[in-house]
Image 1 (cartoon, rainbow, N blue to C red):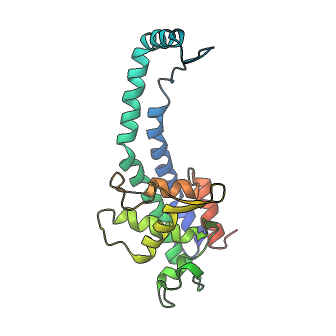
Image 2: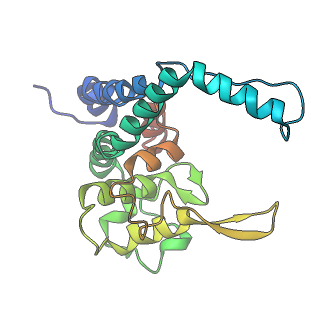
Image 3: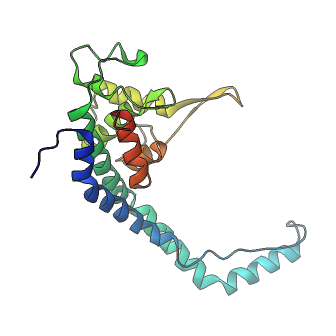
Length: 219
């Protein structure tokens, strides 16, 4: 087997595995496709007896479909950890590529107090910005959390990335909000990899590959 001497060779050598991870991930979404959700329509005031009677009749006629849909929704929700495990492996492949081929020496301003000049974490201060965070650091943090999801002592850089993703400011409402999707204190989430790859917009191989190449100056 040829040695992987650059990011293009690395991507070529790992492409089939990452594609299969995305395919496996999307296989879970088939739970959301059938049966189709029935839609209730009503012309008139909803605060009326006519509305209540019409809705009750519609619900009775669609009871079997509604029950099946609830069952599938619950099955999909139950598989969140499995889906995140798959996306965590995608982050792992990205992590390996950056760790091996990034030559970045510049530390992002918001992390200079945590990332020292001799730290390999500076390799990950690359890529487009999401919420003023280089996506290389989001990949780093997401991968670390996914691998060490049962470890409460997450690396300080990873913890800060999650803190910045959790706390966001709305210019519209001029206030700060807190997101459960990245809150490490959210006991309902063990592995955040699905949420992390969502904000990266990694829902197919092409998007993943484009970001990796751009980060490592391969395109």
